[in-house]
Amino acid sequence: MLRKLWAKVKNFVKWLLKTLGDKTNIIIFAIVLLVVSCEVWIPYLIAIITGNEWWWAVDSACWAFWLAPFTPFIPLCIALTAAVRKIYDKIKKKKDGD
Image 1 (cartoon, rainbow, N blue to C red):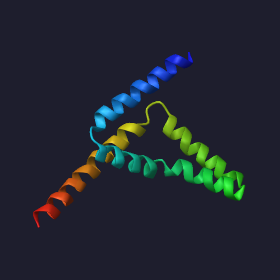
Image 2: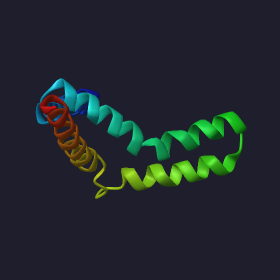
Image 3: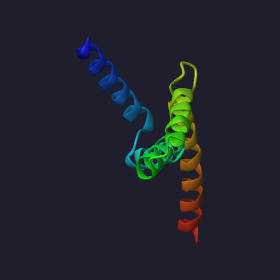
Image 4: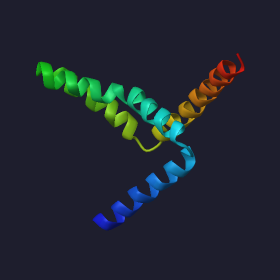
């Protein structure tokens, strides 16, 4: 069972890297992933630092939302990556044109 799970994760990572294409997109995707998922990891960090159990509840609710079956976390991150890349290319083109 663990081998099947590992194979699925490995295939997903290969597909994701193929979809993103180049190094710039992968870097942008990593930044977008951190920003979009900050509503999950920041409350956990606050809960660990303060010891306040309310933060654990808030974060668990956010995490449960993103883990729900039809919540498009990865497609949303890929779409945001594409949008940021278009803006990046436009700025780079304008900079190179000057």
